[in-house]
Image 1: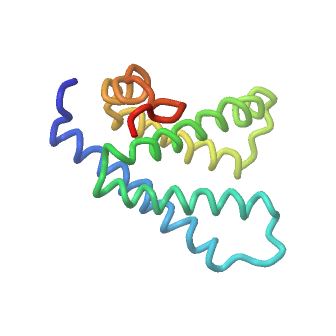
Image 2: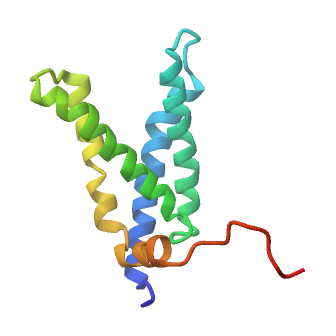
Length: 138
């Protein structure tokens, strides 16, 4: 497996910074100053995004080890776009809030560009998994 270039590591770090910065700027203030009547799943979603922001900040120091955070961010956005936004768009029912979310989720293209896909394939798909049973070495 070829080594990841320094430029690619900086691109990854910029992606983590963009992700963490956006979450710390827009989501954490809502977490800190929410109203008690907030719908349950809104609080759950904000909490999950808050955790992603903290983990993305760790990606500044460990860009390759924290790749699953970027993959999670990419995957949930693709799922939302395909399962929720696309049917609304097809039914011509996209309101202003949905359009804003579509735009925000579409920024995941940055992740697609930044991720070193050969590295992901080698380390998460082709690489042999860890054993499931107890070790035979004592």
